[in-house]
Image 1 (spheres, rainbow, N blue to C red):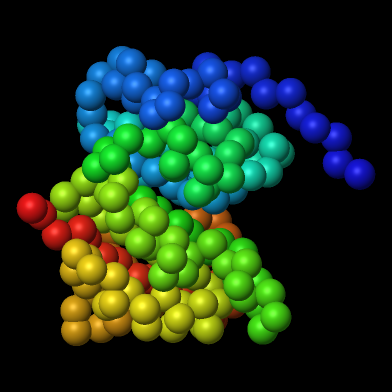
Image 2: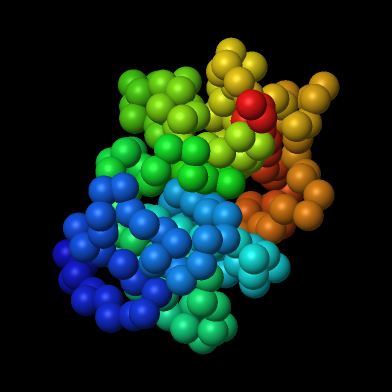
Length: 208
C-alpha cells in the first residue's frame, strides 16, 4: 500500500483553495497565456516546455500524489516559477477552475490507453471530452495529443475532424510519428528507443 506524501511546495496548489473559476493572473502574478498539461507524471515534459516558454504560465495536473510530489521537486531544482502543480481529475478541474476561452494550449501525453476492449470507454480523450474542452480553449488555442498506443492514436485522429471549430495543423496527415520542436517526456524517449512509434495529433481552435 502506497503512503500518501504530504506536498509542501510553492509550486503546489490545492484546488479547493482557489476560486471557481480561478483567477490565474493572480495566482501567477501576471496575465501571461495559460497552458494546461493533463497527466503530468513526474513533470519532465512541463519543466522542459516551461523553461523554453517563460512568457507562458503552465498548469500541470495529475491524479497521482507521488507524481505531483516529484514534479514539485523537479521545478524547485530548476527554479521554474511559471508552473503550478495540482493533484486533480481533469474534467472536474477544468469545469470548476478554468475560465472559458482561457487556455492557449492543452497537452495530453501518453494517457492511460485502457487497452482491453471492454475498458476503452474509460479513456480520457474521446469525442465527448473534446466537445467539453472546446469552450475552454482560447481562439487560436492548440490541442496536442500523443500516445504510444496505436489504437488510441488512430481513434483520436479519426474523430478529431468531426469536432466543430478545430483545424488539423498536420493536414493532410491525420497524425504523425514526429512533431518538430515538441518536447519528449522520458516515457516517450524510452518507447522510441525500443523502435516503436508515438502518434502525435495536433489541432488548433479556429479564431473568431
